[in-house]
Image (cartoon, rainbow, N blue to C red; front, side, top):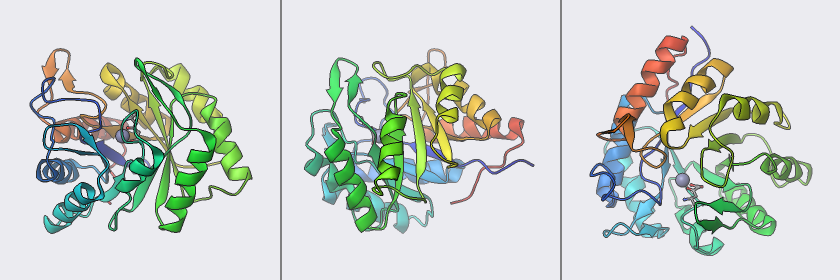
Length: 262
Ligand code: KMH
Ligand code: ZN
């Protein structure tokens, strides 16, 4: 068997809505249930966002706390990663509300970019601020890289001592405004990593499972889930993030890589 693959499940995100898929969870109870199911299906990590009951994105600490508590009350041992990316338009202070007790990892977005028709703002001083907060709280950062120049920010953070091992790199490929989800792009990005580090890929939309297959082949790790993609096959909505995790587990089996435990 090859090296275990860390499968992460991004169960809700900030953008997808229940109008697009009835499987999108909104309440803390629904989000926690989706995370627990993803863990049962083989995910070792859950990437969490929160929502208000009407579906609007939330970075409220109370929502994240309830999600974390419910995951643990259900007996799940998945590694809990909270999003500091939140939604476009949120201030950095608002976004930091997600870093509640019980979180084990937090995301660290590597730069500003077009995000569909909006702009996702991550000015370098704010990236440093998030990195510092993660370190102060003892959380493992996951660096979200959407474009090649963001690797230079990653290198700069390391050089300046704002970031140090252990950290994880997530290549998020296929956001309109970032790099597309292609094998050529992923190989280029992996070659550009400033040092040896665990990395994974989150392919957006139809790129999700194809990019998972490429990552498995290249020795990387995998993220799937409704935040990134709503479909299990062309025109067929996934019943939940756990179904997408099952698909990733099947790909891992074909690649000879057992799913890592939490
Ligand atoms: N919702 C996106 C604008 C993260 O989780 O850190 C940002 C995002 C990244 O989802
Ligand atoms: Zn996210």
